[in-house]
Image 1 (cartoon, rainbow, N blue to C red):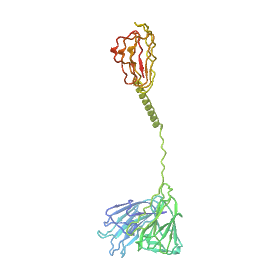
Image 2: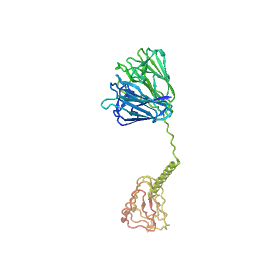
Image 3: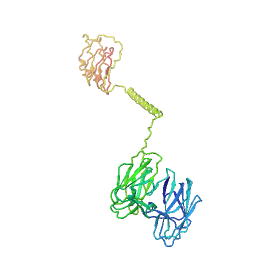
Length: 454
């Protein structure tokens, strides 16, 4: 059986009518709720077997306020504020009878009330209920709970005090006094009185001790202060051991336990010791258990791979086709490249003798050009006659330009059977025949094949 505590400001409590906010440092979370209007209602739904409403009663010499309680329209009760000279905290306003374990609804109605601006005198502080649920929380464990073992028992004082929950707390009397609490949950916080000079060590599951010492400015006892808060723990059973380190009293009032989470966690516990300053809320801001989530490995389907591969193949084919098309469009080889061009085959030529009696002369061998230029044929006009039986082969050029024959006009006459062909260039430009009009006459019976340039 667990005891769950619910603050008056919890969203599970629905208020209707007129309600006001109050509170002091010794009250749970430092807050209370009260109504100046008769008939104001607060409704709370829970799943358990018993419920208790706690509050504070303001000192007054003329109490007229009352508060009514009912569960499921059946069991009911009324609290009437009596005449008190001092304000009382953590007082049970109503305790329900035992109920069947299950869902229930508690309705709180303000009876007679003191009109504003007069406060109270009845203030709602918190609600606790018994449950077997393992997910509701936080759990409340009082210092007088049987699960807390004090060693030695005779060295711990059971103190009765109004600011303490249940009006009880335990305090050590000498160094070495200790206690151990076994609990089920994923984190724990310890609350108590901060006394000047107190020094204690806290250990979770036999791990590294965490030491507590009150703030330097603390000179008086401060109740309802957060003394220790563990980090996230794995779900399951754990132990908290606390020991006094010096002669100054170490006081413990209650514990708040976070229930087990739905998913287990393997995170290492971490702990901290602290003290809440006077007048501030000491809420159990427990750290949630952490877990590492692994992402599933992603797989790429064939429907994604196939289009990608096909697109790559089409791109390669397109580039290859473009290069081939550009190469076929280029009519001549690139500059600097050597290529072999076969001369055109000319028709057979029948040789004949010129009108002069000079014997036939063998024509010079063909010229092959690999560089930029070749020497030009000059003074061709000095030749009296040439043998018609020889054909001058074409000139082959591998450079950019090839020179054509110059000063052809100086030739008196040439054998009509031998004609010098035009020059074909594979580069950008090639010189043509110059001064051809200076030639007196040329034999037309013999055609000289064209010259090719690379």
